[in-house]
Structures are given as C-alpha cells and as structure tokens.
Length: 114
Image: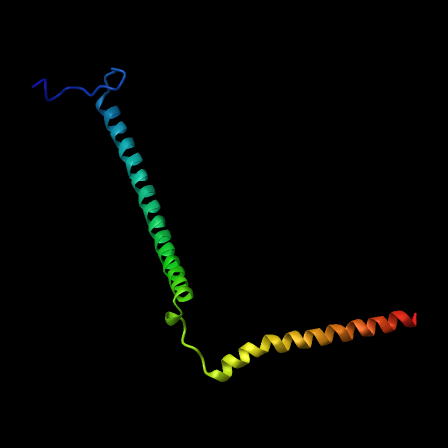
C-alpha cells in the first residue's frame, strides 16, 4: 500500500505536500492553456496571411500570363475606342506643347516691356 501513496518529488529532491503538488499541476495546466491559445492565434494569423498571399500570387500569375500570352489578354474593344485611346496622348502632347510655347511667348513679351 505504500507504493500507492508515494509523495511527489520536486526536481531538487524536496518532497512536496499534496496541496503544493496540486498547485504546481494547476500552474502547469494554466501555462499550457495559455500557450495553446497563443499557438491557435498564431495559426489563425498565418492561415489568413497564407490566403492573402495565395490570392496575390494568383493575380500576379494572371498578369504574367496575360503579358506573355496575348491570346489570353482582355479582348480588344471596338475599333473606335481603341483608335481614340491611341490618338488621345498625341493630342494632349500637341496641346501642351502649344500651350507652353504660348505661355513662354507671353512671359517674354511682358519681360521685354519692363
């Protein structure tokens, strides 16, 4: 019967009473629960980050595929819209060039009058 009632020993060999042994086990249990919750939280954060990275990876792969394979690119719009898009930057460049030359001319006239 003495074998069933062996007292637990602490690491340095000191015998613990039943209250102390129970208190240590409760503390260990609390520490393990906190650690488990922290790991669960870390796991959820990593899973969310993984989903975001997977979506980003998919979008980048789609962009890469559309750039390397023109057949998978967006279908061309009607000819009028695509032609207008091509000539629009040229018209803006011409307008800005004329505007800047006119502004420089006006500034020179005012500068020479003084």
